[in-house]
Image 1 (cartoon, one colour):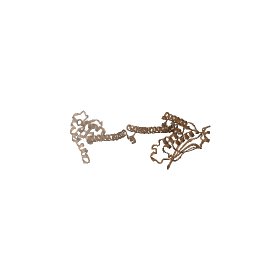
Image 2 (cartoon, one colour):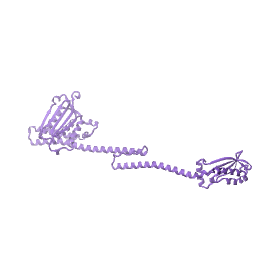
Image 3 (cartoon, one colour):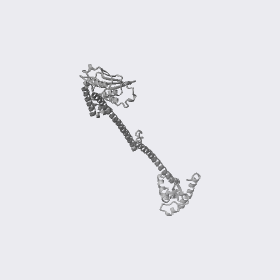
Image 4 (tube, one colour):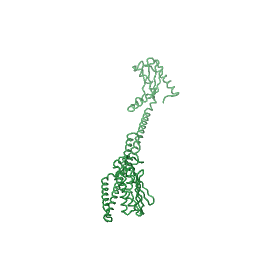
Length: 420
C-alpha cells in the first residue's frame, strides 16, 4: 500500500521537484497562496495520505491536505473514527522533512493512513471474536448448571417414586450446590424416618404377639386347674387348686395393667430399664414358682425331676429383679415345655446357687415336627426380659433334647455385695 524500494525514492524525488514550483504561504490566512498549492497536494497524495506544511523557523501551520478517507459519509465515518481512535492512531506512518520550495524551505509532514483500510474489518472481526468468546464462556457455564439442574430433577423424581437409597449428586458450593446438599439431607432424613416407622410397625406386631402369648400362658394354666377342679378327682387339694386359680387371675390382671410396659422388651435404650420395678426378691420366690409349675406339668401328664439345692442360701442371699417379669419368663419357658416336650420322657428342673442363681430346664422334644413354633416369640420375649434385668437366658438344642438356662445375679442380703 505504501511506496517501497524505487517507488519510495521516486515519491520523495517528485515531492522535492514539485515543491520548487510553489511558494510557501506567509500564513494560513494567505488564501491565494494556499489555494495555489492545491495541485501540489493532489498530485502527490491519495485518499489515505495527508500533507501538512509548517514554517521551518517558526513551526507555524501554513497549509495542508486532509485525507479523503477521513471524510467519508455517515454512518461509516463515525464507525471509522471510533475504531480509528481505539487503536490510538498507532497504524499511522508519519514522516517530517525539510523541503525546498520556490521561495524558501518549509517543514513538510506526511502521514500515510493506508493501514487504516483494515481498521473497519479488524474492528468487526474483534467484535465478533469478543462476542463469540463471551457467549462461549457464558454458554459453557450455563450448560453446566443446566446439566446439574437436570440431575437434580432426576434425583427429585426418583425420591418422589420412593427411591431413597440413591444419593443426590454434589453440585459445588454455589446456590445449586447448597440446594443439592439440603436435598440429600432431606433424602437421608426421609429414609431414616421410613426405616424407623417400619421398625416401629414391626415392634408393634411383636408387641401384640408377645402380649397374646404372655396372656395365653396363665389362661392355659388357669383352664387346666379349673378342669381338674371340675372333675373333683382330688377333693383334698381342691382348695389349693382354687387358690392357684385366684393367683393366676391376679397374674392376668397384673399383665393387663402393665401391658404398655411390653414396649420395654423391644427398646434398647438404658433409660427404659428404670421403668422396671426392680426389687429384692428372695430365693424362696423362685423355689415356689418352680414347684407350682412342676405341679402343673404333672397334672398335664408330664414326669418331672426336681433338684432344688438353694435351701442353705435362702437366708443369706437374694436376687434383685422384677417379680412380674420373672413370672412372665417362667410362664413362657414352661408353656414351651407343655407345647413341645415329649411326655414319655421326664422334664428335668434344677435350681442351683453358687456365684449366681441358675435355673435349668431340660426336656425331650416331640417327634412331630409340625408343632415347632414358627416365630418363637415366647423365647425371644423371655431372652429380652432377662437382659432388662441384667440376667441371661441360654438356649441349647441337641438332637431331640432342648435345654433352657436362666442366670440371675446374686447379692448378699446385708450389703448387696456381688459375690462374683
